[in-house]
Length: 519
Ligand code: UD1
Ligand code: CA
Image (cartoon, rainbow, N blue to C red):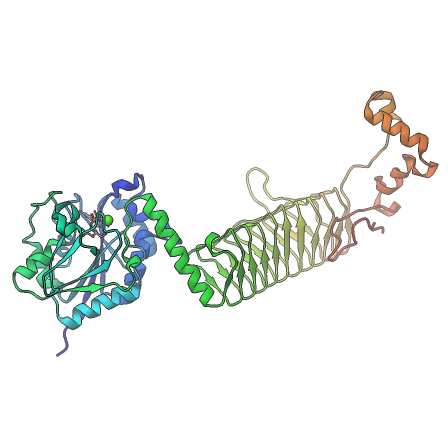
């Protein structure tokens, strides 16, 4: 009969992390897309253990709340007083009295641990039939860590904490990574024998090894192939260097998978992000959360995308997006701000100093400059002129705005919601639109212009404006006199030959810059 393979994972996360000097429990500090604890749980997840117990203490409510979000199958176990790592594991095992088989214990502050390494540790442990196996690593600077003490034959004798170590033991550079596999029954027995006779007066989990050796039980050491995986996090300087190491690991993997990173040193990609082949990420770019980047999209420089989907072939330049969708071959920026539920369809354009929130921008539609689009639907191939503002909020409630397919909204328009501009309709520049514009109609809602001849000479005599006006009037031919302005920009009604100057956009669906649209 084969051995039962019931496995339990115990993650130790009750410590305060004093040296972090933080109100946030140490294991909840974020690191490229997950908390420290989240990384540890992700490294253990492929083992598909029957149970995952997380020992919580400092900030127990916060840590338990985080678990509900990221690992609902894991159970918190409270260690009210932090009396050492051995004490923590003892409390965890008390919560699962029927536990047999393998117990894996992982310090909650080892975020660079790889799943393969945990698996290899467990396999080495189970195939050797050991009572306990520790993950070890050879490091350049072992300061602060527990040392692996071996006998002449190279067998593990004990693990000694630095503060309890002799000078000879301190010279050892093989360290305890804080990740272990145990046989449950023998672990339980031995935990009952731990003393607190050490420099910290705590129950050390590491003492289990010496005690097992003393009773002739087989123990093992599994040496990690990559020592950086075993690095813990005790203060914010270490956190920053872990972040750099993880960034390099993530970036290297994406480059090997066919993504171009123009400046990996300034590119920060969360472990939860995915990129397709031939995507290009330019410098100073952060891709966070569940962001996805499609094939041949170009993102950056100077872009932050959080939980945002970028379609194939899209470009995003010097912009910030949160929970947005950027369609295939769409174009964003420079200096755009996409807020939650901004959805840009294929080939849509959201340009310079444009903010979009909870709105659909249809296929090929353009919002090129200086606009706010909130709670709106912009139809396919519509053109929204510069400085158009959707007035979505009346101080109490938000209202929807709809702009139909291939509609043409002139510059400096306010669309006062709820309102609808029909398909193919035009809106005159400078309008404040609060009534629907039917399909194909021109909506005009602005004051008429009147010019008061000679006003500057009379009311601003002696100013440089008055002097310039005088020069212009003296030297200029009659046709360039002020009255010409009246016919170009004046406010006659549309039926009298209204000059619209609807847009500044030279491309796209509407008239080019400087064109007039007359009915
Ligand atoms: C521990 C090991 C040390 C090893 C190092 C690797 C012991 C005695 N020492 O030292 O050999 O080299 O990890 O990083 O185990 N915790 C609890 N409850 C407690 C105490 C700690 O849950 O009562 C948790 C902490 O939150 C932390 C983990 O256990 O996640 C390790 O505790 P920490 O105090 O950081 O141990 P180290 O001194 O680093
Ligand atoms: Ca530690």
